[in-house]
Length: 124
Length: 473
Image (cartoon, rainbow over all chains, first blue to last red; front, side):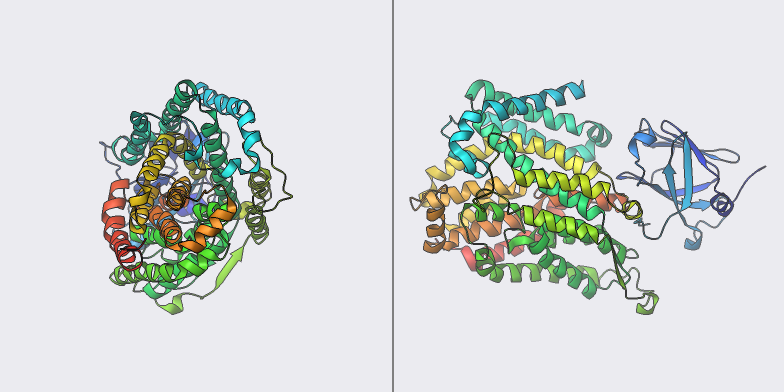
């Protein structure tokens, strides 16, 4: 687990994720419980899911959103990809560990990762 | 391929708008509001309702059975089915008048919806209050009243986000569904601004306050019954009960005040119509008027001048209005034969139809067709019973005085039944889309129809029919 950063570190030091077409690379590992992109609510992260392929690497998370050719076409500058994440090693059953994360799609393949603003609607 | 079909469709519409100028000149300023059935053209074959049925089936089943194919292809499916009807009318009936008229209605519809959608997208209301069943009921009732002032679309767009936010610890799909019932539909039955069919009635000569004077005593028990059922359902929801009122500041914050100005412009522009104000120029043969130009200008300026932070907090996106625009262009086009055939039948059997039949027929069809033309066609048929012509304002005024029960039945049904499906009224779809983006799993078309609309609304509508319309007329 070399170079592994916590979510707090990622957010405070503004570490970006990456995207290439429909592929998202997020600089943390953990369990994603729910993801909302546009009006798609994704809760099935199993290998059988046709919507998403979810791969945990050693120190990052690889996600393929099969219904989107290019994330930058699907998500505009005012929108977010929203997700509920439980960091690797944290108790998934403790709701205090459920972090609401916003991912903004920027130019040059950058994904900005932020704690979700409480003004933005996202129901767990 | 898709782009070519879309371009072809719009080229045909553009061609129509100029080709039809000879018809339109004759109609002058009444073109925009003439019922489809009033034209002297040949009736379509019954099989021409098939594209409409296919489109309804696609809207109902697409998001369930082939969600992602539907999400990527609904614009093209809607346009192709619409094109079948358009080409049939052009080639086999030679009826450009009806097509242009429908296109003009569509433009009016989308101008109003898009301007309200964009202008309200730049407004952020934060309600930091504990959501209780009673607080929710009060919120929904205020929304229902507001719908008469800024329209069901305006009220829905303005209030859906604060409603979700207020209930964030306990929200379920039923919250959204009752919001659609009350704020997006039933609430707006008291003024012509509330819902488009009533506005068409107003343009035809019905007094602005007639709807309030003659509908409030039906509106009030209906909205209270729906709210009471909501209260019972919401009282059984124990989620979020651990928080106390002291966890909330009780404050209501309002940001984006300048967009209220844009909402005001939209509301005033609703009346900028040659049929309402005589000095307003008609832009015939163009399929739009000054009103639509103002509304589309509001779309542009309210978006360009909106506070970026508010747009970000609202996660503003054109997709919901794009979805409405594409689906409804298909609905407007494919429903022409259905409306004409219904109007024809209504005329044939008009004498034997009582107010109750008008109530149910207008209602059921308004749930699946656009309620504005449905309202006009049934109003036309009801007036036909008395030998009156919907195109003559004096006769509309006479009809209102002579036997108002028919207009009451048609008006109430056109507005109330818009709530029975997602496609019954424009804001229904937009509220659904905003809720899904907030992570709320919404029911499918059929679950919405059978689990909620049929079980909650239809019994109430039956009570309304028994009390106010059964055996009348």
